[in-house]
Amino acid sequence: MTEPAILVEGLTKRFGDLLALEGVDFEAPERSVFGLLGPNGAGKTTAIRILATVLAPDEGRASVLGRDVVGDPDGVRRVIGLAGQFAAVDPNLTGEENLWLIGRLTQMEDEAIIPRTKELLRRFDLDDAADRPVRTYSGGMRRRLDIAAALVPRPPVLFLDEPTTGLDLQSRNELWQMIRELVREGTTVLLTTQYLEEADRLSDRIAVIDHGHVIANDTPARLKSQLGSTVAELGFEDEAHAERGAALLAPSYPEIDRSDRTIRISTNEGARILVDVLRILESGDEAPATLAVHEPSLDDVFLSLTGRRAEAEDPEPPGAEANGRRGRRRGR
Image 1 (cartoon, rainbow, N blue to C red):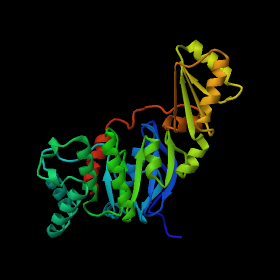
Image 2: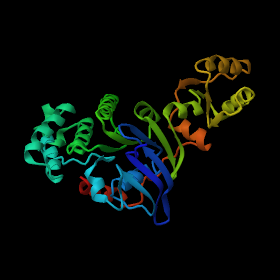
Image 3: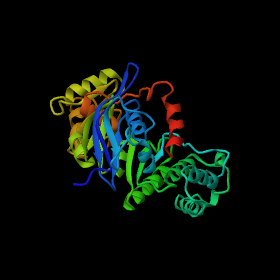
């Protein structure tokens, strides 16, 4: 068997008293998308920064295309591209100038930079805005330019840290399509995200991270099958009605989750759950005020795996974000 494009074994990282990663293991084969799924503060960005040689691990090892991130950091930087959580492009330069600058920083020959820049601007639908300052770009355009910048030196491995956060639906769909095209052309992508839908749409395999631990690692289909394919969410007028509704449903759905005025039920029964739930509640004169049915979300993943909801936490200790931005330029 060939060595995986990305290999992580026992990765551990501390920031003072904060244990950001503890014994993390995963591997990603070449020409695939590997998703790291988890809430803010789970350790996803810390893992990316270690793989990009911005941070050094305290324990464990990690390699990219056989190059160790500690033993051969220069070798790792030569084969990776990185687009962090925030677009790291210069707002005072034009889109074309930003890409040309990255080409020079990565020591490409001038005769190779110009055609590569034009190719990426065209591919990311930015050629009409190539001569405009980036400060005039929309959020989606900046994000596309940021990813294009990571691709200037044609890296075989691309790290995307929550690439669609803050983007509208159209911009998200455009980025998803671009990521699929990159993989078809041979790029290996490590994607971090808070969105199960995004991980499901793009990833060949997903590792779910919580408080620095990998709590699940499987294909999207198998992961979802463990959660139940459908989630029904029932809203009531007040907590008292919700409590009585939960009591009525408990015999048929003993693992329901009730929070304040809301009842959530995960099931493999599909839309048929609507008929059963409404019949049960109507028999007890406890019809819900609102009713919604949807596919599992990140909350549902964590509720199933940990027994609690995903929590929004401080993603990094003070100063780590700035360090990551400085390190990104070094890694080009």
